[in-house]
Image 1 (cartoon, rainbow, N blue to C red):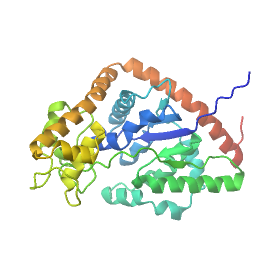
Image 2: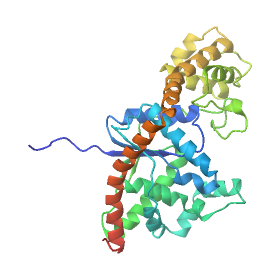
Image 3: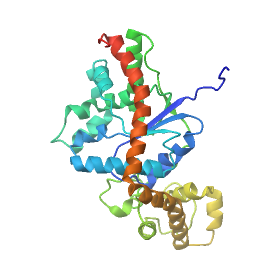
Image 4: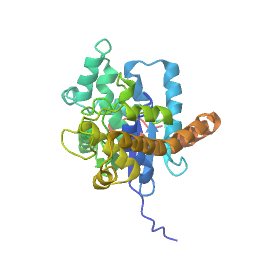
Length: 331
């Protein structure tokens, strides 16, 4: 009997185990990952190889990798429906290194930024980091990659490398496209609302971790910077209020007009209470599920093993194809 089921296109997205994601990471990207799995063949992973450019403690890498994996499952990513895994293939990165020009790698803004932040550890791994990202993407014959504006350059170099390789050896890698889905709000710092919310912010009041408890969330929202106008509406220059409105909208689905109407005649106290409660309601199920999963190490290990086997099946085919193209013996 002929199978007329159309093959799903592939989406890949990885996250580094460098700390607990923020509310901004969640509303801007992670929340949408679950929605992708119905229409696409999804690969979601914890990019542990990428995290050692800053030489973290080995025990911390292992712990954070497990924690991040548990968090991905807590998001609602079904490990049987999706491929949820920890990538383990660096061989393709070396092959692609040899097809990446020094000039194009040296132009990557992330290398420049991180070199300035860590002048005592400007290593080759940091320089070649974009090629490792390219290998992850190309290894799984990815059609789409969900990216933010700050990652656009990485996808461009991935496409350039793949195009160069295909031009030399024939069709080997798919040229991935950016995933244009429902865009989440760009969530800003609660203390400096003209800056993006970041888990590396030195002020803990500036960001909300997705694992913060209800009391911590409410305190951080109540201390969020607003202005002296005490009126809830969106306008250029009202950065703090605009940010809280964006958060409230993402958590409740309400439009700016509905939010403005809801808080017409009310002050920022009422508004912040409502925003805080909405964030608590949004994150509480995630936090509860994470706490349940992180205590079941055997289940997590089982899911990781299954994910690794599923990912390896696709990865090994691509790797063998690339190795054969460049001339390596296949035994």
